[in-house]
Image: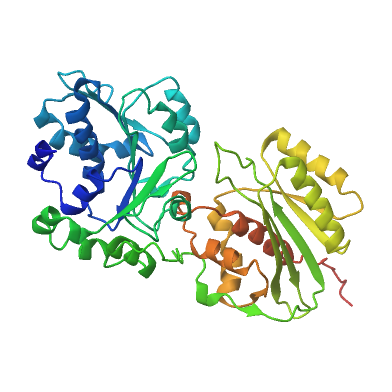
Length: 425
């Protein structure tokens, strides 16, 4: 450990270095030294394993590795590591190696079957859609005679915000949790104030980086607050949603379904949801979101659910179903229409950017001509919509927004009247 102090880790990093847990989630505010810690934690293994040390650092995309490369040059090269620019591998004269790789999709983890590593580092996982790749790669930690070690870093407020909160004991920092099979995880918070080197080098960094951000993101980046509600507010704001206690009488009803293309599995623990949004429109032209069904089910079960819901909603409710592109999507839509014989079923073919299709529904919510009926689905529904931006990598799911926009567009499509030409008298 004494060699590590020549690298001068800060106090919070030292606390993480000496923590015996298998999996360390080191995260919080911007500027807390997250990436430095991930590399330093591998260096600690170098002094234990020598030439046997094998480490990999992952970012979501190849382009995002640039920041890690800079820090590896700063930390590893003085220790004798030589960078192979062609394959992003740092090699030590002792035989130790440190690789830089990307993990954009869960399937990317399958490239490492049969590999053996002593250290895995997943940097800035806040924008990951799924954390399944981490668990798949855990099997590569083997045969080194030391405690297997994974380091994960992230800020609050990203796409994986809820996934990280459910995976790690964020409410009890510094206290490891241990699974029935003995795998331990711990959360160690880090703040800008914990990083004296950056504070001294750029004392205005954090205030400059957060001054123009939405309040939820400012609290995430400045305070490392994991209790924030993600509210980008680009299309929907929480204050605009009005909830009615009494179900209104509507003259027109539609249930729009957005079916998930993938199913829940160990490899994909956070797939898109199947969502069915029921909307109605009154004689006064007001639109109401009456009910939302949101499930993770197999395709066959979803098909049965749609049929059951159609019976429950009644034959006066039109059923709208999004149609996937290509012939397969067309065949699937036709099959669903036959399955729902006796009901009015229409398919929707999506065109253009989806966030532009949200605009009419978003405007109606803002102007409160579209309101919600009180239900146990309200909280999850609003939470999803207020998190949306025009960049899918910044939020988790948009299934409820897509289904709602499809239903709203159907109920409020322009009415084309017949044109009569009268002869002059």
